[in-house]
Every structure is written in structure tokens, then in C-alpha cells.
Length: 130
Image (cartoon, rainbow, N blue to C red; front, side, top):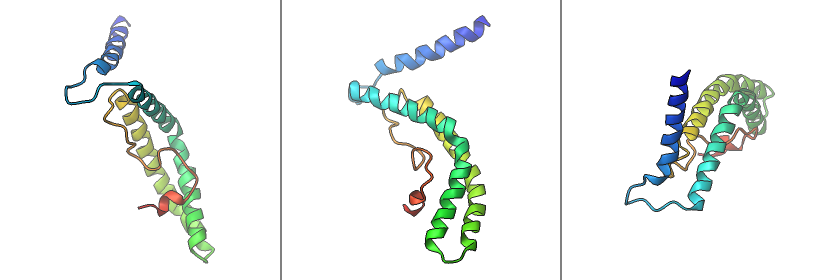
């Protein structure tokens, strides 16, 4: 039990010390960098918790996408069926993105999200981007 407490305390110390251990070629920290770190931590927690919602979100998004693009009524059903495997893929990807954001929030150079859209959405607009 004591060993676990020491390990947790050591990990917390390493996370807190990182803010003072920047290289000379990096700009100094300011309030804006700290705000971005907190936003990344929040984004990571939200993505971690909301990752199971990707299954219904992908099913709905793909059905809505095909409903707008096709006159065939079976296209909506096909969108639902297509959304099931994509929902599982995006669920794992969003979970991994949440873990990544949670562990890299102290580092100022990892500001961009590794998944698009940054949060779970039920809108098919992200399917049109690329």
C-alpha cells in the first residue's frame, strides 16, 4: 500500500516539475500555455468518458449522411449498418485520443487533437470534410 502511494506521488511530482524544465529553444510559459494544458486535460477526460457514445453517433451520422445524398430508402438502413463497425472503430480511437490528451496535457507542444471532430457529435458534417 505504501509503495503505491509513493509511486503515485512520484508520478504527480514528475507531472508538476515538467512546467519548469523547458529547453532554451522553447518559449517561456505564460498563462495562455497553462490554459491550453487545462483545456487538453478537459478534452481528454471528456473524450475518455464519451467514447462509448461513438457507436450511436456513428450510426445516426452515417444514416443522416446517406439520407441527404440518396433517394433510396434502403440507403438509411445501409448507413445504420455501416455505422456499427465505424462506431466501434471511432470508440477505440476516441478512447485512445482521450488517454493521449490526458497524458500530454503538461507538454505545450501537443496542442492539436489527434481525432476529428474533437468531441463526439451527432452531425454528419464531419463526414463531408477531407
